[in-house]
Image (tube, rainbow, N blue to C red; front, side):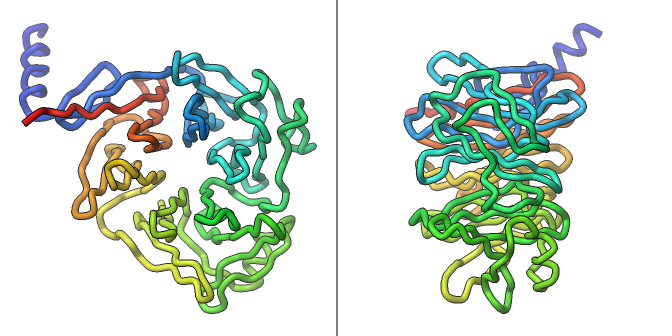
Amino acid sequence: MKYLRILALMMVMLTGCQINGSGMKLATGWSFHSLSAWKHITPNKIAVSPAGDWLYTSGERSDKSAQAGLIAIRLSSSRTQILVQGMRNANGVIFAPDGSLWIAEDDPKGVIWRMAQPDEFPIEQTVDPVASSSSHDSLATYHFAGTFNHRAMAFSADGHFAYLADASSTGALYRLDLEKRELTVFHRQNGWLPVDPADAVAMAHQLGATEFAGIHDIERLPDGSLLLAESESGRILQLHDGARPTVDTWMNNQLTHPEDLSWDDSRHWLWIVDNGSPATVLAWDGRELHEIITHPDSRFGGVLATGGKVYVNLKNGQYNPSMTIELEEKHHES
């Protein structure tokens, strides 16, 4: 039996992929190193501070963890600390144009939490989602963004708007004017229609707003358009905003459950997390999709390409812990 296992491992190495102790299979030319690993935290989306010192990841509620919140990893040392616990179900995380960090709760009563100075935020703070209160003054709910299953977030290139999506199976797409603090919902024929943040979902239904099949991420492209990962349909949609906003299909029939997107400025690729079976991290080079990582048993959380680096969250599996990893591409001289 021992020799059979050795032979099987040798055959895998010869087929153009790599399998490691985490259970991940990597495409030829790629490797990774772990920044942090946990047994009782389920990491999801990823954001890196503008200065590039800290990586932030949301920790969602799961059977592995009863406490949802925000984790920070210092990239120079991989020192990991839990910043906040107690959120309903922390999912999306993104830096706003003003430097604050937004954390999204994926829950029917979910809100956006705004952290004013994330790099200076003390560790082990708590929030009370029912009372919308926090143990630290620089973290508070941002009620202008509405109450619904928050997950996907992005900002316009000029910093005037935040785009938010209700991640439920018939959820709507919203736009928040950051200066006027006015929330609107997308209607395919009538454009952006105003809604009350406290009653956004009900008003969206009353107005006949366009329904989507679970938008789980939003990513801005260099041309200013926005890609929407519609997980339940397997599609990626594209929003062109303006006087007459439009949403059209950008990619179809190639993915199962797209969950997370990240544009790679260095490679001019789009990174995609597709949590089908098996779960896969792919890269779109403008012509075709390339499978970079697959895992037969676990699911991937967020992917983030920034400054030439690519970070990925692997969620807890039957045989592996959760991990935040940095991908490394091997360059061969010709």
